[in-house]
Every structure is written in structure tokens, then in C-alpha cells.
Amino acid sequence: MKVVTLAENTACREDLAAEHGLSLYIETGGCRILFDFGQTDAFLRNAEKLGVDLRRVNLAVLSHGHNDHGGGLARFLQINASAPVYLSRQAFGPHFSRSGSFIGLDPSLADSSRLIFTDGSLDISDELSICSCGAPPEDASGQTVLENGVLRPETFRHEQYLLVREQGKRILFSGCSHKGIGQIAEAFRPDVLVGGFHLLHTPEEARLRAAAERLLQCPTVYYTGHCTGQAQFDYLKEQMGPRLRAFHTGSVLLL
Image (cartoon, rainbow, N blue to C red):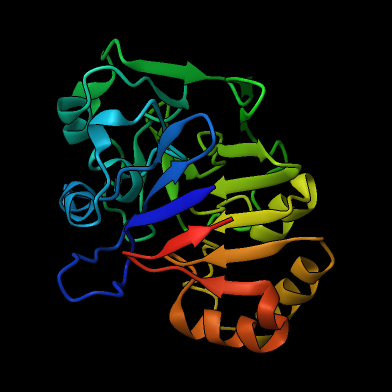
């Protein structure tokens, strides 16, 4: 399996655009997948420079309804004429950041015939499954959702994960792991987990140490970036060693 990072907060080449967002191109033995779309069209411009033809993508998955993962959705629908996009039924909810800014998806896209709405789990094929974590989030990080005219702490019901089974391995892709990276790792116990850990606003060493210890209890190798935070990654790396690795815009992972 090949995983190419099309958009992430940092880049490993000067000619590639970095942004606060995430987009991954996944090539398995039988399918070409786009996982998340970044915040702008940077994923598309980077794909061209990296030799990835997004017109040939067979299907796409949106991890959750925040604009740093779904901001490029409209451009993908324009350049790819047929790939279905799998997203949660709650993805178009009115989501807000800890500062009160709207961070949801463009509501004008909700009626696209290309969208396939999921209710937490769906087997796409023998190889691919959409999954969710039913447990409540361990920390909403101040993010909110508007329900019945009232802003309430996020439950992240709109968060979903892609599980790929190939050559005897189980690889889980997560966008931001809002439900809690430790909780997600324990729920699925994959061989490999690729995604953000959402620890950017977690400076406390005790919490990071607890997270590292929890992750090491699972039989998993982790690749992370985006919302994990550089200082947080550096600390976790000291605790986890080769079990934790970073990805950046332009990174190519062979799993």
C-alpha cells in the first residue's frame, strides 16, 4: 500500500504548499482512495507535482465535517467526474471552533448526488470499511455544534475512520481523532494507524505521557501529523521511539 500526503501543516519540499489541513492519497492493490481534501485546493496542486492523478481516484472518504479536512471537497467534485464521497450523515452540521468561528462544510454541497452518507459503519468492500468510535469524546477541546439553536459541546458524531485490510494487515486512517487517540487505538487495535492525534492544545507533560503509555499498549505503529503539534510529537517520540513516525506534505509511506 502506498500513502502520499497531499496536504498537511508542513512540507518536505519547498515547491509544495503546506496548510493547516489534511489530505491523503491511498493506493491499495485494488483501489485508489482520497482521504480528506485539506482546507483549500492545495491538495490538488500538490498532487500534480507529486504525480498523483486525482481524476483516477475510485472513491473518497471525508473523516469529519470540519473545513480543514473538507474545504477542498468542491474542487475534488469538479476534477473527478465519478468517485463517490463517503461522509457521516452529521457532517454538514454547524460546527464551531473553540474561538467561536464557523469551521463547518460548505452547505451548498450537501445535495450533491456524489455524496454517500453513512451512519457510523459501512463495509464498502472486503478490503475497505467505514468505522466509527461509539464512545463519547474524552475532550471536546472547546469545540461546539449548534443544535436546536443552542451551542453545545461537540460529540463528534460526524467523525469516522477508514479501515483498510491488505496482505494480512489492518491499517486505520483517522483525520483528527477527536474521540481521543488512545480510545480509538484501543477500540480498533490496528497494525498501523495514520492520522492526526489532536493534541495541539495539550501542553501538559503528564497528559502526553499518559497518552504515550496508552498507545504503546496497542500492537500498532503510528504515523501522525496535522493536529498533533510539533512539541507534542517531539515529546511522544521520546517516549515511543520507532513506534511513532511523522508525515508531512509530500511524504510517501509504503505500508
